[in-house]
Image: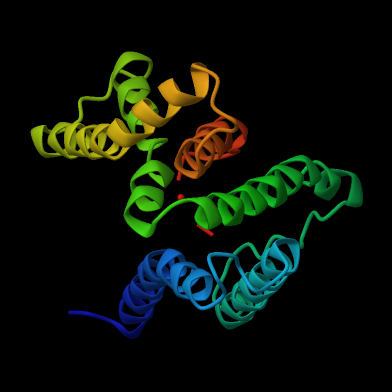
Length: 193
């Protein structure tokens, strides 16, 4: 039997999927309405996005607090909390990079390359942890890699123009490079904003 808590979790998961899907599309609409440039200050957008996430997380915590055995406040120490400042700084850098990449890439290219981190995680889980991904999971990783390869065909020719003395790297190449760097600074193996 499906309980109310399971329905709430499903609704929240669907909302997260919708946000992740709609964000690059809304960015594209904003760019098109403003001559190809975003009509807002990127760090401010990241700040407001994180503030909304904080409000949602606090509301969820307050709702669940009465049924939790451990609320997280029992052994609270400022010195322990400060350890989380490093991942928080990485998240801030990562979220800003995501917005800059969205400014440079079309939505399908952004979505594919934002999921790039799944490939090394899938391979590492097999090689390092000994976990055996299912054939469906391997197929999904292969399709993701093929999609990324397809989006970079134009990028490779653009980079060859740059290497032969072109003025600047293309928008697509810079956007993909931002997402590749973003994977390196990511404190966790999932996408965002």
